Image 1: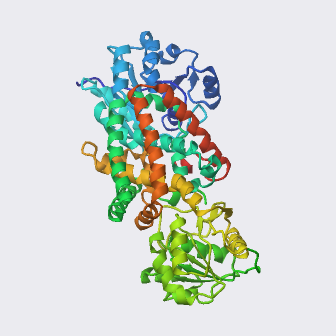
Image 2: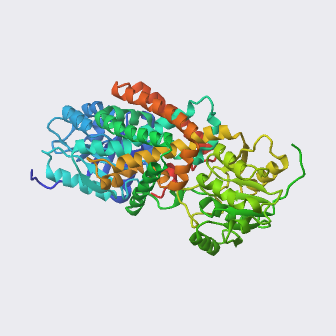
Image 3: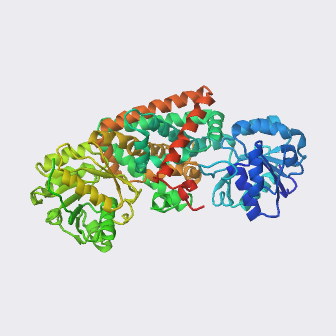
Length: 305
Length: 305
């Protein structure tokens, strides 16, 4: 659909945690001509957001925050999007673009379309974050050199997609456009299953009778500590991700379990060759991730030794 | 068993990769009165070890390297220890302490006792490393503030245990003494299973039909890249670890799989409460690991953003 060029001059950020706060700080640093208004359902978060300047104006209601906005970005757990969208349904301008930052996109597209029928909706997902959460966690460079995936519906206004792309590029992100179903499959393997596995092994390690928790902590430098980082991520956000992207998560989990069972069998049968072959193949992926700037080249993630 | 105090003045390092090389460099930096001789089966590694000064003298045979040594440390994959020990069997002094750095301890204890009967054998495991390997990977501070586990047999000479403990402490490590069976169980959960899971998910992600390898790499910042680090570790070393610590690895893998299946069931049944409860519990472990100096407190392992 061709359409008039759109200009994003006023952005409303709904939810002022790690990602919402980082958007506000990144706009202030990289696109200072854009005005930001922010809202968070938690009054304590609003107070702290105000102190840190996460938005130029922190509003007392989400309706106030979206008033006059060209772009509204929901930065709340995906399980809260339907309710947050319903709250602002009457307060949007006709041309306001509605977007989000959630980790699953099919459920978000459904929820936003149901609550805000007739509005221009372009779900998005910046693939960036840390294990920290809340209004103190955000920082301006979070999106630099990270991919932001847009999943516009087929009917989406082209000018709106262009405007949203340019907005994210101005914060340092690189843009990819794909359909929501494919996004959910890709992210199941690159993000959701890794989190699920990390949460599981950290749980397994805490529940052993023969190995104490203190031992697990002391000897965590043998590999375990790498998993504890993502297992310290926000519980509400991740509960919602697994429930909202259930089919893709279960599909990928099934494949992972098959592969793990094959490896278990190789160990039981002393099949060193099968182990060696896999362990050799997996090195190449790390090399590519570093070459493409998606991770630090320094050993141990550049941890201070 | 009480005994004469022992003094470690001459150390032989057999195997000059990440850990062997780091021992040599750490001695040069922290205990320069100790003389080091080194050997590696690979002539290219010996040449590079010589250039980097990983040992004061790099020898052409392992017998030459252990000649006159108070302490011999095997730093080879655990599957190679029996052969490496047999090679020096005739060249050790009566009082030479024999140790190693392997990640599984029951099999090492058996192999060393079989090859070097009558010698003072004290297996050890510094819980430290990076994903890199080879003669260029080592650095002097690798063991600082890391635990080194000693697994002396019950009959071990006390003075030898004390001397080996003091040696590792002089390189910056903290000492723990436990029996080999318990070591193998603890390390199965804090190190071996994390590596096995990481290798598996990286393999799973590379073999998908519906998600390209390029997509896996691009969106790896969503969590996956954390797993690729340890899945880039040395294939020979890790093959040997899994085969040599089979019972404990299979036991812990069984527990992990049970826990993962329970989580899978919770997702399938939309049991958000079960997910939330686990995800909340796992945060505490990360906090303790950071408090006890076993990982970086900075978000994202302190990666450069």
